[in-house]
Length: 306
Length: 240
Ligand SMILES: Nc1ncnc2c1ncn2[C@@H]1O[C@H](COP(=O)(O)OP(=O)(O)O)[C@@H](O)[C@H]1O
Ligand SMILES: [Mg+2]
Image 1 (spheres, chains in turn orange, brown):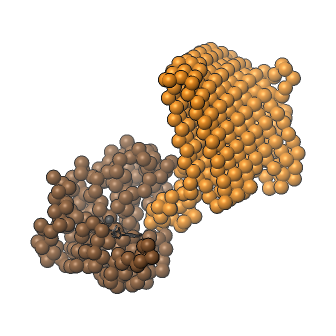
Image 2: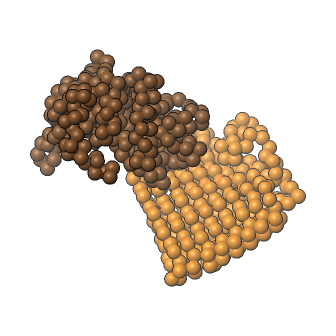
Image 3: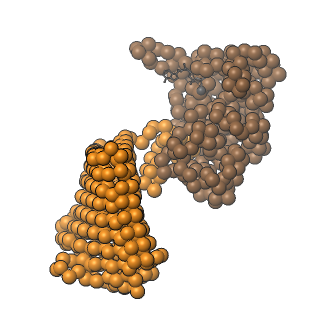
C-alpha cells in the first residue's frame, strides 16, 4: 500500500496499521485485505452486487469491525452494498469510512449503501468518516445511504463526519425502531468552495418507548450549500429530538427542513434548528485573549465541529 | 501605565447623538483601581474602550507611553491588556481547558489549567472538560472568565463586575485572587464594582456618574463619602 493510500486510511479510519479484530479494506473496487474472527464473519455478497455481508454473533462483546474504502483513481464510480447482521446482545464498534484522492479531471464517485439489522438488546457504535483530497479538477462525490432496522431494546449510535474535500454529497439515513430501541445520531459537516451537501433522515418510531436523538452540526463557508432534512414519525408512545445547528459564513446557504409527525397522543417530539453567523461577541472575546479575527473564527469552528 | 486623555464616546440613536462618556481623563498605574458608579453611568463602556472593543469618538489612550487608540483588540491584548467581561460569552464545543489554553497563549497541561480553576474556587476535575456553553450557570461562567484573565497574567487587567453572581463564593476569596494575581504579574488591576469590600482594597477609586468622572482619589478620600450613596445602597440591597 502506498503513502497516499495510507494517508486516506488514516483520515477515514484512524488506521496506522492493520487493525485489530475483523476488517475488510476495499481499494479502487477490489479487496485489499480481509480478516474474519471467531465471532465476526465477513463474506462476499451472493446477490451479484459489489460489497460484503458482515455477520456478528450474538453476545459478541468488545470487538470491532473496520471496513474502510479507498479510491485513488479518477473517472471511477462505484456502488457498494454492505449488510450487517448484528446478533442479540452483541456490543460492538463498527468503523467505516471512505477516502477519495482524485488528482485527475474526471469525477470519482462512491455510493455506499449500509444496511444494519440490529438484534434485540444489541449495542452498536458506528463511526463513519468521509474525506476527499486531490488537486485535480475532478470532483469527489459520495452518496452514502444508511438503512437501520432496530429490534427491541437495541441501541445504535452513529457518528458521521465529513470535514474535507467532498464536492458533492447526498446522504440518506432511514431507521425503523421497535419497542425500547434507541437511536443516537451525531453528524458533522463542513463545506467550503462550491461544495454541496444534502443530508436527510427518516425515522419511524414504531415500538413503545423507542427514542431518537439526532444532532447535526454544520459549517458552510464560501459559496457552499447545505440542506438538512429530518422526518421523525412518532407512531406510538415514544420520544424524538432532532437538532440542526449551522454556522454560515461568506456567501453560503443552509436550509433546514424539519418535519415531525405524531400519530399517537403519547409521542413526544421536539425539533430545534438554528442557523446563523458566528456571534460577534465570541470573536471579540477570543481577540481579547490575543487571537486575530481569523484565528478566533478558526477556533470557534474547530470547537463547534469537535 | 495606562493614560486616558479626554475620552468621549457618543452613539447615534434615532437620529440623535447620545453622549455616553464625556471627557474622561485618568491614569492607571496603581496596584488596584476601582471604578464605581450607578448603573448606566458608563463603566462597561469605559472598560470596552480600554480593551479596544469600542472606539472612542474623542480622546486618546496611551499604554506605557504608546498611543494605542488606533490599535485593534488583538493588538492591545498582545501588548498586555486583559478584560473579563461583565457578561461572559458562551461557546458551543469549546471546553474550559481549550479556553484557558487560548488565554495562556500556549498549550497548557491539565495540571496548569486546574491550578487556575482552583484559584477561582472551582473544583477543576468537574470543569476542565466541560463546554463553555449554556449548561454552565452564570456564576460558573464568571469564575471561568476570571480564570482566563489569570492565565494571561498581563500588565493590565480589567474586571467588569467580577463579583456578580458568585455570592456562594466569599468576597474574601475573590480579593485574595486579585492579591495573588498582583503578586505574580505586578500588573495593575482595574475592578469595576459596587461592592464595598472590593472598594476597600483599592489604591484609587474612580466614581463615574452620567458618563463623567465625578470624583477620583484614594480609598481614604473617596470611600467615606460613598457609603450611604445610591451606588452602595444598591449593593447592600443586593446582598441582603
Ligand atoms: N451602543 C449603545 N447605544 C446606545 N446606548 C448605549 C450603547 N452602549 C451603551 N449605551 C448606554 O450607555 C449607558 C452606559 O452603559 P454602560 O457603560 O453599560 O453602563 P454601566 O456599565 O455603568 O452600567 C447606558 O445608559 C446604556 O444604555
Ligand atoms: Mg456595566
